Image (cartoon, rainbow over all chains, first blue to last red; front, side, top):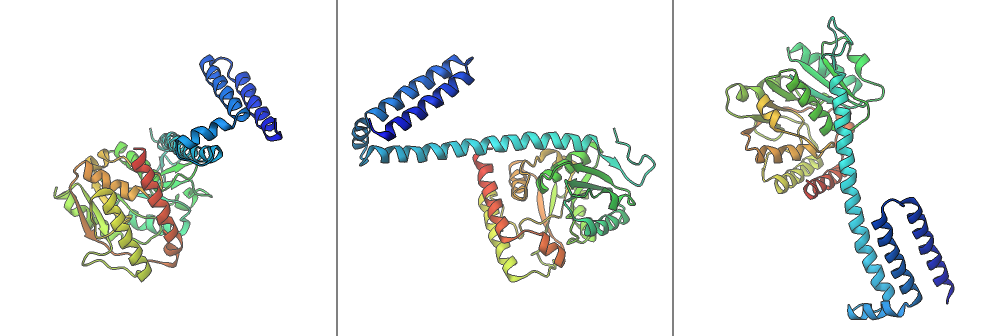
Amino acid sequence: MSGIQVVLMAGVVTLFLFYALRIKSAFVNVVAMFWFTGLAIFFILFPDYTHKIAHRLGVGRGADLLFYLCILLFLFVILKLFARIRRLEAHLTTLIREKAKSEAFQTGSKNEHAPLS
Amino acid sequence: MVIVPAFNEQEPLQHVVKELAGAGYGVIVVDDGSQPALLPSLAAERIHYLRHPINLGQGAALQTGLEYALEQGADFIATFDADGQHNVADIARLLQPLYQGECDITLGSRFLEGASHNMSRARKLMLSAARFVNFLFTGLYLSDAHNGIRAMTADAARQLRIKENRMAHATELLEQIRRKKLRWKELPVSIVYTDYSKQKGQSGWNSFQIFFDLLLNKLYR
């Protein structure tokens, strides 16, 4: 077993424990995470299998295949994050707008600084 | 009623408000999170004052103003930039076709015959690019893009809902005009670019930001 394999496996297992301890209640999530962790450890121990899959897909090395998949994944995550940011912004805007409207008032009149109902 | 969205336009806004109030319009100032707040400099005039506690952008300020104006029972609503580049007399010209029931919304244009401006060539070029982008996104080919002076009926205002908080709202507005089949018209207006409005206005870089916002708007509508 090479050094990098130990490091990667330690990382993956730590992530899993962290996740499992945090989200005890969502049982399905933990099971899914468990399978992903198992898969990761399998490919870390036997990297030759990623080579085989890569060859099937017409990619030279397993590491390259992972790299390409990661790019796709990141693009997807970025799009999702943008969507979430826009949603948050919309919520924030609604809140601020309601506040601004409820606190609106007329200046230069008798009821100065008194909110109009 | 005239909506003036404002962000840190302390001095020019005072003039704008004075002129608008002097012309007999109900003025709604939407202070979009200015620091310091714009109220103290405006307290002498009779206006409606709304304040966003944080800066959201001109689109958000306009939408807030529109909703408030409708709540106040306004029959006709105009929008006006706070930096003093518009001419108050133009509002009456924009309102005229609305009174006569010719259309639902009128847009100020800097390029129609009868309009006047003191614009640099670079800016002119950039605006024609913006017109083309507007056309791509909305299908409306106007003589001007992103001009802050407009007028609409209460009924049109009720149908519009600006969701783009920042500058992309100008294009979003056109798209909604088309989708809701509002009757629109462009009218020539005069613009005076002061040093202040140039410095405060949209730079070339901002147009990329607008373009990006528009893309996202299409993506996640």
